[in-house]
Length: 234
Image (tube, rainbow, N blue to C red; front, top):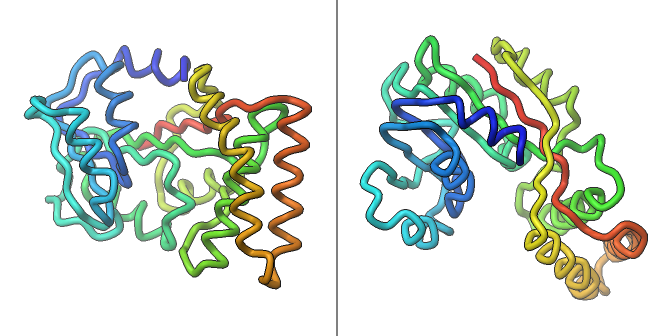
């Protein structure tokens, strides 16, 4: 994401927290683009993905990973200079609690960085990715796993405003990466395979309709990463 990367190149932080870090992909972006940092902690509610993350940053003693709920951390008050959460707001079932905790653990002059796939504004090839995500949300939900549909720009800003945070900068950004395009294209074919497993379910017709919409959009426009809504707040 060119816009975000350019912003990060002019920033330097002491302590950084990445919430819902999974395999550390967003930490990799920070490491590759920030002008400097002292330490980065990645947390998630499970250690799934930590093996890949730890392998990625093997030998870097400034980065560590911990299993921890972002809504209820054990970090001291006003500890972090930068708190990040990327593509995970819609995985959190209590966003007000999460944002309250972020305000508690960030320094008074600390920065909050949110990167989220917005529900609105997706079109053409980026809509293919957004539709695939919508299908995954539905399948997870019908499987009993909490996975909310993504939020609109307006809804995300309302969460931030209600938490008492102040937006310093916000913009849409787009990942230009041919390898990621190929990765998303592979998921198009897998969509119908996933849905076929639900043939005997009352939800099959709804899921099949989304899968066919994915295929149609891909045939018309191809596939690329969805637009990301980037917010810097305090």
